Image 1 (tube, one colour):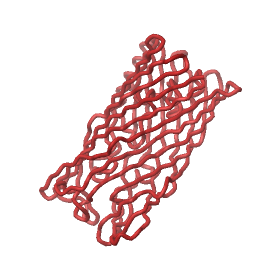
Image 2 (cartoon, helix red, strand yellow):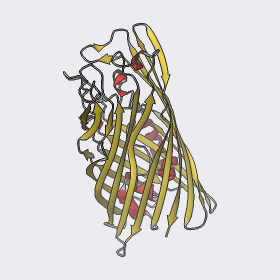
Image 3 (cartoon, helix red, strand yellow):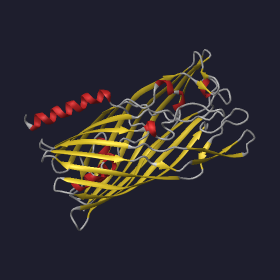
Image 4 (cartoon, one colour):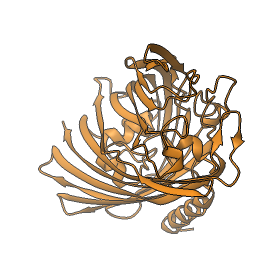
Length: 421
């Protein structure tokens, strides 16, 4: 079969697989405007420092230049909660504001050309929402009748030094540690016991908490036109989060919970057989079910504390294409189709983390100011999706005739700069 026809067949096969793919959940799906405009596909397509470092560190051996890339994403989310309890229905729009997501990556070919060093400082996971208390929306009624005001903000950043070695002219391998830090705030804090008056305290992390893990990768040039890549990010084992709170008398109390980030397996392919074109496809697996906090059962213990969010382990798929126009302009587009790790029945437990998007469309481009510097811009739209389940209370279970619906859509605006040596 002609290689070009084979490439199109492979991409069509990847699109078919997307019908069975899942969402990336709390993990941010791309790093920087170049990776974002490709839909996050980059495991075997090292077109920039952030693209290479974020999903497959071994692919930095495939980059031609020492490179510094800086990017910032701005997240604009539209979140709504509608609930029905006892025949009363109300709807409330969240006010999460704009959420900044910074990223930085540097790659450098060492004196021994077999070795390439990379350093990434990436915002890898997070969520944010703010739902005001309401007298008309039953689930947001003041405590203890309802949950009252619901606010959340979580951000996790990883510092990732890596060394990639070209084992042969075609194959590279890489390894490095993942130093992770995160801060979390949740109100009401349902992951620890309720106060004596059956209300929950708010909880704000006392400081940035730290954890660690590691990553491995491999990058293989199968033919001059085909590239393959694979990587593994271990779970980020975080120290126990401690939060400041208050009891029913306003006196201080210390709250705790365990919250890790999942391990991630990425497989990808890239194709450059068409003049001035690049096509990329990635498949990933996120092991939320075996991750503290996210994978623990969403059940209450005898004190009213919620054990976890009960997320499922999931797959994700990303497709991207790049077209070079002349010497200065590069255009890109990407698309991902996802289901999400939050089941309908768990909608109530995820009002503060409503990460339920399924379809994501991305586009963007670069303008080369000269041979060494390029400015980059991208936009992603997360199409509206909903999750509906019953209201579930401690000691009661599912409230008969009740329902809670999370509705979410979002947009990312991403911009940055690449400097090459």
